[in-house]
Image (spheres, rainbow, N blue to C red):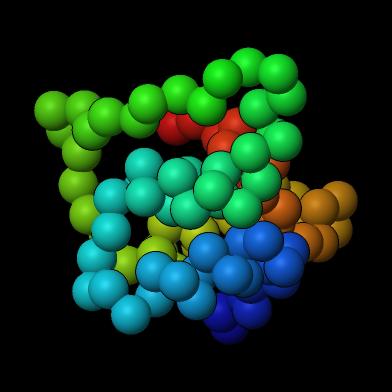
Length: 89
């Protein structure tokens, strides 16, 4: 049974912004969240994000589902922007 993603308002806005595109890079998801919450970086200047040589595109829902799968939903019921930004594979 597929689990419904519980998204914070920021992550939901990001999803709505990008869902119309067939595929996006993960960096586009991060940029969209940072555009809504530049305060997440604190006093650190917002970084210039670039694509690595192995970058690939996927639908935004796939990116968010992959990030969501890294967290125990009983401990973290809602996927917040800070979690998306700090997740590394």
